[in-house]
Length: 290
Image 1 (cartoon, one colour):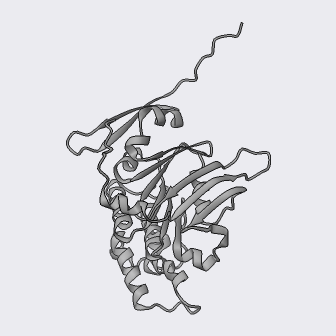
Image 2: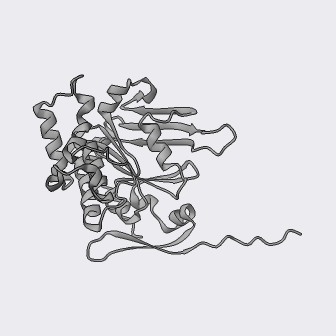
Image 3: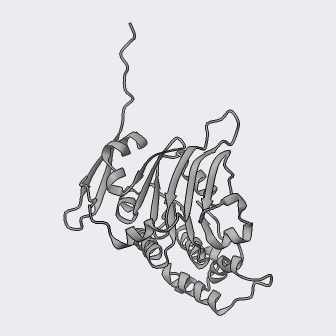
């Protein structure tokens, strides 16, 4: 894979470095049971406003746990997770919900609600006790529905939609929340090719336009290389590499993490990197001890 890094720093990249991280983890360890393997082990990272960070790793690498720590759902056994410089544990629930939105895997749409009603639920942290819509709420919901190509489905029961359509509703609900930190766990699962491409383009656009830090767990290597500005490679709960796609997504590093032979190249016409998984790597046969 060609190295696309440049010695000239883009103005947007330089500006991001002057702003504090939207999300930072410092030596975070999570143990679900005292004797079990850790869900995270001394994981550290920084994601700044405007960055799109892709979490890559095999199943069980700790991607979902990391997202739940960032959202305040899972508390670290040790180490510290901060949102906008404040320990996640110090935020009250409502204040954190105004800043952080999480789209989990396989969420089921609530029964009996129209698509627009579900998307409008994303405005709850910004509304009063009676959940009355203000013009800003209406605008945020309409914008999220349009961006996720749901206008023609807005009046339909959300639980009657296909899996891919429900996924877009969940993403629209998170966008309507207008968070400062957007966390997504395999957000393109169930999406068709067109909507998958549109989603990743939307993620990059939202991050740049609104200076939102976006962190998404994915198995789509091509999308990570094309749309992420930061790639975080994980293995057995550890962050083993972090940097630009060109720095991190080498065949050698990907093969080590996924235990699969991977051919990497660059598409001549578009300049986009691509990755082709070939064969599972065979366990190394050790010579008998003497």
